[in-house]
Amino acid sequence: MIHRWKLYAVCGLCLACAACGNKADFDENVAKDTIGAAPVNLDAEQVTITGSQLDCGVQSELWEAPTQVSENRKTARLTAQGRALNFSDDPAIEPTFHQPYAQVRGPFVVTVGEVSAIRDAENGTKMVEAKAAIRVPHVCFANPLPLMGVKHGNFREDTPVSFLFHRTDDGWRLEKIVH
Image (cartoon, rainbow, N blue to C red; front, side, top):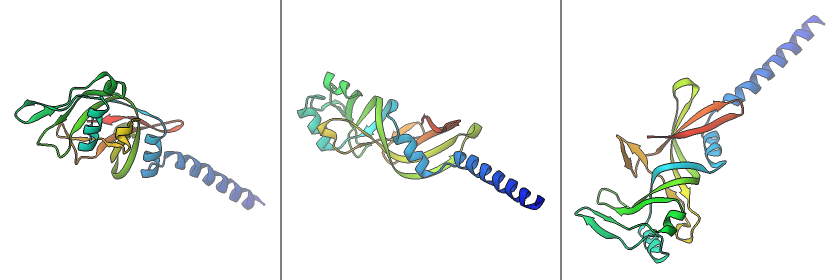
């Protein structure tokens, strides 16, 4: 009888530990679900846009037609309609980038594609590197706009975005995008 009681106690303890352990588990699915659960407030992040999206933005009066501003740079002056969509700087075309790019600021729905790395960071946080894109609610942007990651202090099209997660009593929370 005493052994049966000990067995029940051990089983109960194992179940309790397993429940606590699941709360701490962090994987690709947790990262994707957490990022996609609510709009993420972005501050001066860069996104790539296609040439056809740039042209559509001109036709929709989100920005003016691109003009040459220096030997290696063209910009399309942003309008009030573009700012209303949370574009925060003139879209630009530069030879160092394969596509035009623009800066965004404000709340956006972020979708995560491929997660390339998950690692432990300071104080129990997690760092996730992933390809990610934002949704812009406008006909010109039917496809999400890819976010650029930062490498050696510069935005790059081929670099994943680094997301920092912090564990709370309610689970994992996206803390910020790290540059």
